Image (cartoon, rainbow, N blue to C red; front, side, top):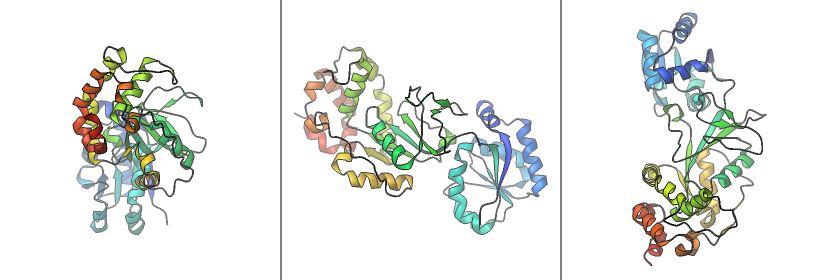
Length: 338
């Protein structure tokens, strides 16, 4: 038995216009009214209660009989209703279907999709990281193991061609010939924390602060990968990096109770880390996920801070991040006192 899904076919541009203006155009109102009459819908539950949900509540009026979300699906067992109208971003439709499937297969309640998403991408995972923290190592392994597509919030040049902008213009993606699910790359300074993305699984990845900032500074400096480099207090890249520290600290505080990975744990306990990723994304064994090559020069392993950071940079990072280091890398605190 399959779910009964009714697609109302409203162009997704109407949803984007709502995000810009805070109200739906007459086309949305008329389409919903036509569906209410055609399918004799007198009791409608709205999935999603944010701005979109309240705008749709004003359209369905007296037929509205409650909001639900992913944590409230069980209440559907005891409700008498004619349909569930999905009041979220069209990017979430496939995720919501998976959430509702078990209950609705038993109740035969139709699901109404407002917007046409046939040309948009199916995002399965947002991968949000501290820059220079093994981001592409993890993403490339996921793409290989799961045959997923790739997208990013950044304007990247790729060997596989130009990125195509998503309909909401929040990210670009490399088109897949198989209509595969996608993983979208972000960093803490440009997250996909829009309301319409709230149901998409997100993994956060970090690496030891000193290694991250050193590698980030080297990248900004334009030095070649093999060149010797030292991050100094009077460099242009350090001036740029200092501008991110306040936001970086807030982000690390924000993700402390979220599902996060430490890049170092790929080396410390590879099997446990891979199983953790599998559990988060809901997939089986990630066969072929390659163990990374250990760079013993990284400060996490060597404690050789003076070789890569001048004294002012080192002490500035210590002063700013020590409380967070004690939370994420407590095993390294003793190395900061020498």
